[in-house]
Length: 115
Image 1 (cartoon, rainbow, N blue to C red):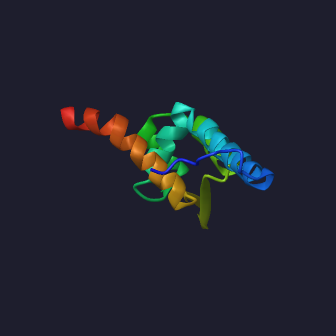
Image 2 (cartoon, rainbow, N blue to C red; image 1 turned 135 degrees about the horizontal axis):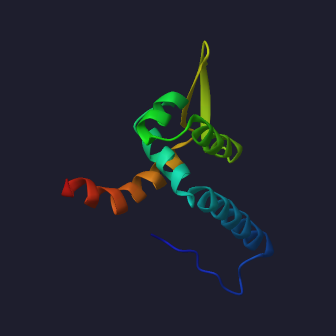
Image 3 (cartoon, rainbow, N blue to C red; image 1 turned 90 degrees about the horizontal axis):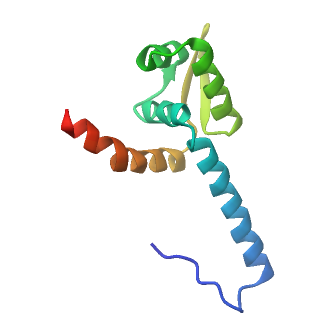
């Protein structure tokens, strides 16, 4: 992975761009820092799911799951699709899927392989 090489020749515009990208990364990491939101995103890497599906899998009350989904929507990490009265959630972009997938590999795979 190539890290940026900052030097005296780095222009103010480049520094502003780097700070903007760092802010975006920071916002994403803040959203991922909550274990329930992270678990929801892990489940959504398998495909879209409804609130009731997530509630059942996670054994959590609907209000708690909905609250975390609302935060994920606010942070633009998930999008929705309505089918009648059901709302289905899915991860909004490949960047989030890739990051959550990497975290899964690091932290969940060893536990799942031990079963």
